[in-house]
Structure formats: C-alpha cells, structure tokens
Image (cartoon, rainbow, N blue to C red; front, top):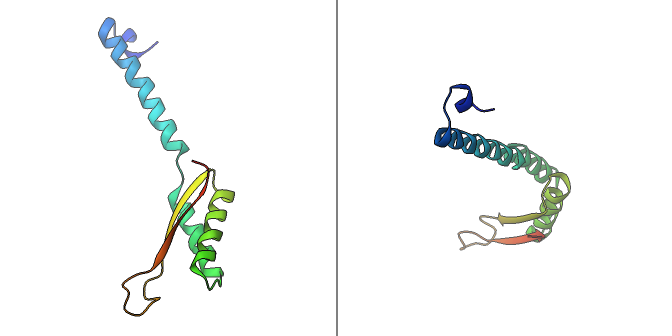
Length: 101
C-alpha cells in the first residue's frame, strides 16, 4: 500500500507515487553499490607511502592489483602521472586497465 491509497487517491497519482518509490529505491541501491572513494583513496595513499617502487609501471600494476583484490570491483582504469620525472617535460605517466569490463 502506498501513500496515494492511504490518502484516498488512486489512478494516475497512485501509479506515479508507486513509480517514484520504486525509482527512489533503485537510486539508493545504486549509491550503496558504488565504491567508497574516500576509503579507496586512503588505502592507495597508504600503499604508495609504504612502497619503494622505482618504475611507475610496476607501481601502477600493484595499485590495480590492490584495488581489484580489496575492493568489490571487477575492472579498474588507472592513470598515474609523475610530474618532473623528465627535465623539459611538463608531465609523464601511464594509463592501464585491468580486470574485465
């Protein structure tokens, strides 16, 4: 029973409220199913601070492995930049994708 029935309304109003309630429930489920980016960021930052990789490619691989293993996701696309790595270049870095889309 929805609010329209309780209020003595029916027809179009009942259908509209039912649809709204269903869509609102779906929206909350989608939000609940998304990654917690704050937690993910803190974990990646802690991992990078504890690591001593010399190759940006190896670091990127390990970050992707960490995200796939510790967070409920099946695919990750990572962009990793290392500003100032090459004199005269404004930026260098790589983009990798791991997992299955």
